[in-house]
Amino acid sequence: MQPIEQNILELLEAGEGLVLATISSHAGSTPRTSGTRMVIRADGSIIGTIGGGLVEAKTIQAAKEIFSTGHTRELDFDLSRRDVAQGMDLICGGKTSIRLEYISPSKNSRGRFREESEKLRASGKTLYLFGAGHVAQQTAVLANMVDFRVHVLDDREEFANRERFPEAEEVRVLDSFTSALDSLAIDANSFLLILTRGHSFDRTVLAQALSTPAGYIGMIGSKNKRNTIYSSLLEDGFTQADLARVFCPVGLEIGAETPAEIGLSIVAQLVAVRAGA
Image (tube, rainbow, N blue to C red; front, side, top):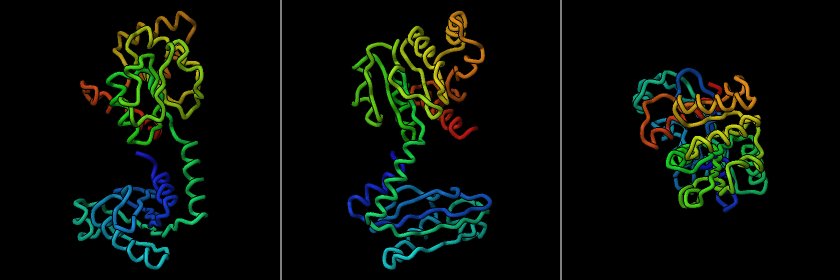
């Protein structure tokens, strides 16, 4: 999945006009919040969602007029009204306004969304997966779905390849984990997740990770494994404050057992950290 701004840019560059529905304001309980966007194409198909139900259906219907007139229009919905709430299969109790805007495939429009896409890309979160095993494979899929830019690094070509990670922005085969971070531009928007095949490799990558300003460092493993690696790092001069940066065991506690479940618990934690929770 890619950001909606990139979808818009691709449609415009293909010469296709569209209607952009944006939640301009909301109050109380609503399915989606202000700033949420949805693309409506001339055939009525959509990219993204503003919450589904009757509100979304009426917005799509109203977009037909926008294609004809090219005028911007504001739609107001009171979700406390029983007819609207029942149509959405829930009682929201809030209010929301949606702006409908026609976007032509003009040079100015293409420039606007190219700039938005570039800004989004520059400010986005990058997830580096060190290790390309089964958990990494599931984590990559889910992380991509929630708009992390995924990079996969492993020293095994049979694991680190495009066939296993088609959604990754980059798949890199390392000569060795000892220099895993050497050429990476790690900053506060970088999320580092250590999922290698062995304790020694995990320790090697973690020692490098602790020397970076990464916004998130996570390492898979049991508490016993964590304690063994931490003790070794303390002997090498790292501090308790350094180790306090690390999420280990990684992921939220949901009773996960399978690679998919573990991936889900990890990505839920990544989203929480990204949101400042």
